[in-house]
Image (tube, rainbow, N blue to C red):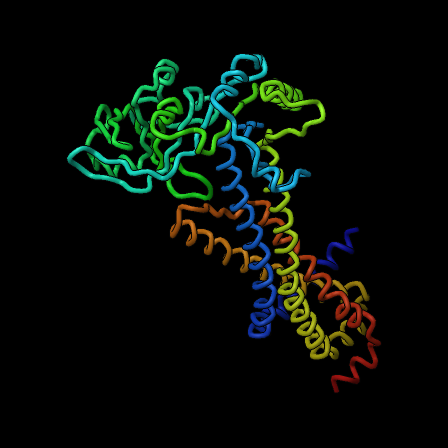
Length: 418
């Protein structure tokens, strides 16, 4: 064991000496591996960042949140499209029916949403914003999606029941309408009606997925006074308790809504109970596909790097044939020669991998500085993956040249160099 250790150390010294004496060739060999490792680590880091950003945005909707509406979130159904187009949207009476009959042991919150058209908000005698995104929901909405307030609060159940003309502004809307003024208690006009600002949300910044910065929240009861719910997209949103059996809750909702709509036993469901976690699962599957595809693309770059190292190693063996012959004549074992060239190949690949990872680190820092949409981080997992792949590439690329060098006949090797 001790002899093997000293043999490896001596092989390592010879490998380092060879790399140092051929700096230009070493740098050219590093380039291919660096590009390959940069490609695979950069792709995986970008995919991880994309997945993290998307999942973070979707987590705002809670775990297993159920959206009851006339269409399927996944866009797949055994029901023909022409039939689905004729499905009715949920009504306020159906919302009240579910709200009354669903057990609070299983349900944390139930709310009725109206998908409002883009609207114009105006400050009397002041600024106006066109195309503002309006969310018309119930008072229980903050129990479904957490909202961070800069000032004020969300509307309560009493304000919802009496259709109080109150509004909550996202950070960008508040800035556009009131600039640096205190917006609380101020009035804005919507569809010719005056609404009192009771809350301002904290700035969320750019990101993938919905942001509340450009949104305004009003109660669905007030929304029904300005738009007809029969002509609007609507949904009933149910947030289960953490301990609830979501499958049983979904079945219960289905039974109750079929009962409310008076569907016959042989009638199909004319609604869909969509679980937000199904969408999350699809996002995760897509991420895995992207990782696999990105890995295959990066593999081509790595193969180019591997061929480059193998070619350099064959040249190195040829140049040092005489030296190998002398070493073997002096008693060097085949394993000593083999490890000498394997170490050289591994070091070339590992150094190239480190340089590629440094490039990724610099790139992620630059991207994070230039945009707030996606925060790309170079994770320890991806660093280890990059170093592992580069070491494997080094071993594979150097194995055949090293084996040929170890198998050289010492007499013929010495004669070749004369």
